[in-house]
Image (tube, rainbow, N blue to C red; front, side):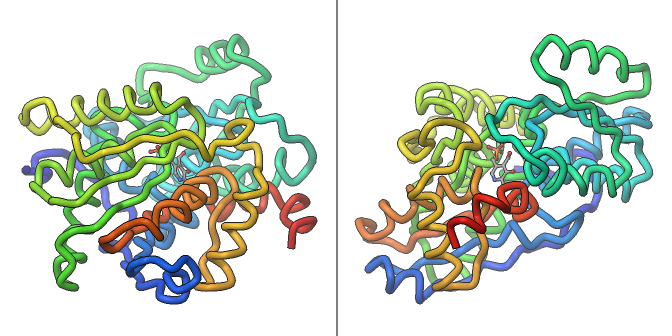
Length: 323
Ligand SMILES: Cc1ncc(COP(=O)(O)O)c(C=O)c1O
């Protein structure tokens, strides 16, 4: 697969670390555990969107864009990383955000990612519903604006995680690990889709487990297949089979962005065994799945840490009450 044919801007620090997590493995009674640290990749407090944005903004700049518009929930990590990338590249950033999570209060509404969006110089438009979101979008859209989808998830964004799969499989193989299970959170889908497609194109024998944090397993699975197919088409490859991929939704709880008791427990587990901080919306819920899967695995288990630390502070009052 040739990713060099696509325009790309340099945003993150690569490769990200692949850390051994022996105390977590002992606590779980599992085979070796590794954490792929896509939460520590540099720009704008880091996270998984930087890999997608390298391709998405590479194309936008080639198209002559001076403005980037994108969408998300109020505490979107994608919006914050897009704002940071636009700051670095000298692009105007319009964030059209919808209040879709039933969380209230200053921490959720003004702190966490939101305050960083403002610091990075983005124009933040907070909308109450879908209708207001459309109106806000139409107002800021213009000829030299490029619109990125929610979560940066389209075929092109997925290529960022195809590249990540190549990087991760290389790191595993350097350690003599040629088979593993990779657990990854799934929201808008391109992260899991890219890992799934990349590992299949490499002919890697391991498995990929996508833990949905928002949609039903059926919807999330369809999205993953669609995005992997779109990315494969961009690479000139055939439709992927993805027989090595499983998608689940049993750790979502009452809904996207709504904390669960098990999520808080697993945040504490990662923190007190490895000093690693997960977030309540994405990595925390995926790690609940990881905690269930790891002890039953007969190969090493990799947790893909996709970031989200600023979002943790959006839940500060709830975290304070827990710990
Ligand atoms: C911290 C974090 N982890 C995981 C995800 C999910 O990634 P994707 O949207 O590619 O499925 C997101 C995206 O919103 C995120 O911000």
